[in-house]
Image 1: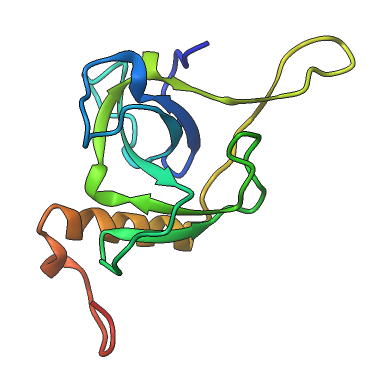
Image 2: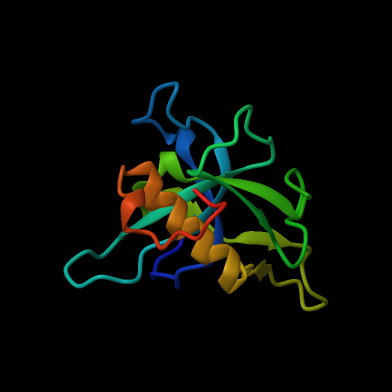
Length: 146
């Protein structure tokens, strides 16, 4: 069931890009995403996300960021390590987003996970978004970094 209310940045949700409106090479299937936008006034029902991929990039680029989650996601994702595809940042409707479900509790009710990216990983994702938008010059760099 889709989310109804906004969730905080750093939260990892499941996004159904396969609902239509996207065409390859855009995202066209269900995949984990990290919320990158806060709740904004007059923007109900929308949030900005960066998709997460379990496949490492072919080339090292500053807009694809390796992130490690504290716990693995449920199957079929079942991993802790993902790559944030910051060049695929997009604004999506809540109707595409869902929480990850786990087994039902002893009371028979559905249980949901609320995974979050660690603060340092989220900072790297935000930095990757800047590079993806051609705004990498706004990041603070140190010798040996991008």
